[in-house]
Structure formats: C-alpha cells, structure tokens
Length: 288
Image (cartoon, rainbow, N blue to C red; front, side):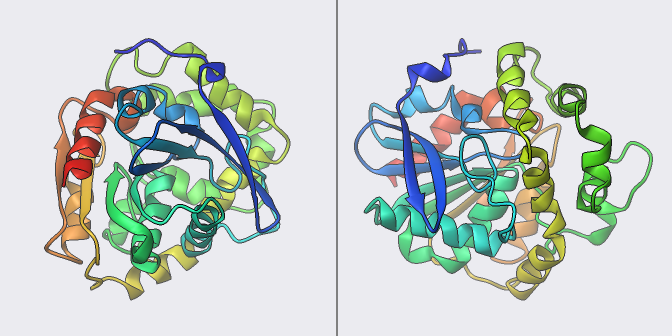
C-alpha cells in the first residue's frame, strides 16, 4: 500500500461557479481525468491514484457540492442530475472540453447521470463500487439484519441523522471505514481524521445526508433511463467484497455494451484499497 501523502503535497485550486466555490486538486498535464469521490470522503480518497497518473495526464480530483472545501450549498438541489449539471458547468468554466470521468460511491451516482446528460464532454466513464437506486432490485435496499444498505433509509430521514450523529462524527463515520473496507491498513488513521475533520464542519453532515434525501428524484431519473445506450464507453467495477458483479450487471441490463467486472480482494473503498488496479483501468481508458 502506498504511503499517505499530506494534503499540502498537492496543488489545490478554487473555482467559482453558479455561486458556489468548487475546490479541487489539479495535477499534471495532458488528457484530463476527472475524479469524483463518494461519501463520507473528500478529494483525499484519490491520494494514491493522483501521483501515479499525473505524469501522463492532467488529473483533477473535484469535490462536489457539500464535499470537503467546496461550498455546502445546503439550500440547493443534491439530486444526481442537478449535481452533474454543476460538474458540467465547472468544466466549462475551466475551459475543459473532454474528460475521462471516474466516480466512486456517490461520485459514481453523479458520474452516471453526467454520462447520460453531458456525453459531449466525455471521452469515457469509469464507475467504481456503488449502487444506483432505480437500476438494482428494490429488495436490495430493504432493511434487514446485516444489511449493507441500511444507511440509505436512515440518511434520507429529516433531522434524525443530524440529531444522532452531531458530536459523534468520528464514531459514526469510523464505523463505515472499519466495516466496508476489506484490505487491512488501507483506511489509515490519518486519512480517517481528514475525512472526519471535514464532516465535523457545521452543515457538512447535512450536505452528505442530502444526497440520500434526493433518493426519489434519483430513482425516477435512473428508471427513466433504464434503456439508455451510453454514447461514450462505460466501464463499471465493483469490489469483490462489496457490490461485486451486481454493479456492472445493473448497468449491462441497461446497455449490453457496458464493460467491467470485479476488483479482486477489494471492499467498498476501491481507490484506497486497490489504487494500482484503479490506475491501470484509467490508463487503459487513456490508451483507447
């Protein structure tokens, strides 16, 4: 496992778009690879991936609405089509015409919507370990003992998640990092502290929960595009000990041209548990 680099070792940028400040790490030159992290993480989820790509590409790890140092935007729309539109506007503001788009978890939700709505800005898309409500069987989200998706229901509730997690962000978020990672040592104490520090900020947990509170809009969007044929190459991979083949199969049911599979030995936090595998997948897209 590569050693963690401090946040200060990377080049940080801030861009004002639509009244929000978007924070990103922007490294290297060449074809653009845009990285979108999930919840409850920040751009730092890509800390092992960026150094391995920046010699051959321009790598931008963008923090979407409510994530990390980007504006919380709590009064805005956290649905995946709306956030995908913000990502599109961000790229236009920075005069970036085409990207290889990579999304993990909530970042993959947004990347999926972006690939449908803004394909003209894409070279290709890589989705990593997520579950897209509206494309997977509803039974997968039913609360039951040992369920891995119980948080979809809890986070969507009004007020109660904040009531029960305020002041206990480290304990609450730590549970996800301990239970959903399969590679020992991949979720380091330093990284977890960076994440929990980001989500201790007033309103940050609400922003994260708001992605789940947009569930019905996201479901309707996914169902409306159940037969969508992707205009640009779509690659989908699940962690062996997380979504496995279920993730790619849910997209193949929409478009048989979707490619992908399973990343062996990996849990949910693919960019941190298997950064070399992620880099190789991205390099393959860059070579295509």
